[in-house]
Length: 213
Image 1 (cartoon, rainbow, N blue to C red):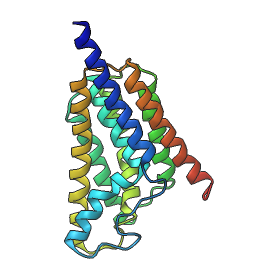
Image 2 (image 1 turned 45 degrees about the horizontal axis):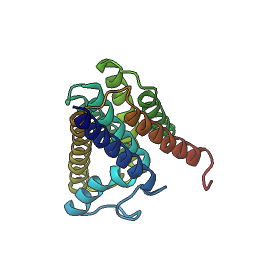
Image 3 (image 1 turned 90 degrees about the vertical axis):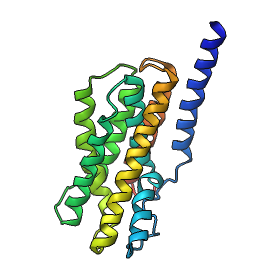
């Protein structure tokens, strides 16, 4: 029994340590798969949509926060879809020239808030996470939209397809792994992951307030 608990604890610690490592290894300012160019084909749009959330450390951190929160909180696996749907709305707002002032600041703040909520180690009700994911999703989506603004319909739809696919896969996949680990919100491992997420959010916020810092 004791050996089984030790192995389980080790697995949980390794999982959340790897999560934190992924955050620290993420590129500091990468936000565009096409190197600043606008996708012009279906394949380019799809690759851009698949890659954008992964190469942006603030976006990746929030996706990890969603997965960890859902996994350790025992929440519905449908909850990440709230963020994914909201991010699609945010992209649509940007490409249709609907203004959302301070979107990047909101993104950074959302990462800090999500990380803090995980780090404090207290379970939150589904409704609270749903509100945060929905509001943050619009801001993250609006930020995503910058890389596809002005594109033709085909790469645009391909971008949205890739964006929805990768975000759904990451959040639900991480949630399943976290749930399988058996960790609770109060455990040290997810709280450390939350602290790492806060750090990414603070770096993103500093980068917005002091460009070039």
